Length: 233
Image: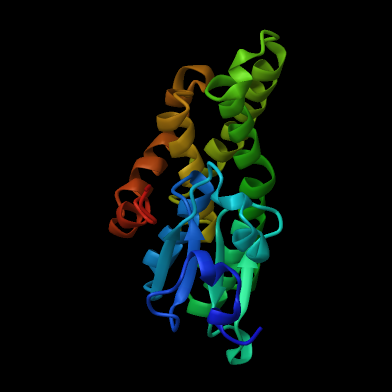
């Protein structure tokens, strides 16, 4: 597949400018990671709304991501000038950091630390908050057994305590440098507090450094733009 026009996803989400990086997403905590990163990095891109009530299961989207999850990208100017299709938010953040030279420390040790905290979100914080949301706001709330919800509350509080300890010593999660690790983490904190109303269950106000950190991140102009991209249809 040599051009964006050759890709099946173009049949459903045609590009206005096929020369730009294409983002296929929805404004969830995982989705806005990429729009925020693109805004922070000032990389030109075009965003397409993939409504997660069913668009992610269409043949066109599955041709891009067989795991049927947003976000996903196609970069018509990938490595060596070749088209690159990529999915999984952590992988996309790493790729964009390499492409732009931004939001990733130059120091090798700090680079590895950034990847460490990125994986902390991808493998822990995000999935645990997401499961809490399922059992409190979505279909899981119909389950009478309280143990699933309690299990995820305990684990989310534990993960928040890990983050709180780090942020008690640093302005951002990787020392004092704003990185893709922050871009991965704070949208999930926002989701827990604002979308899932988890403040009381998690005791979020007790994590004072973490809450101040969340407000600092949300105050960034690029973040404010990225949170609204792509628009909900």
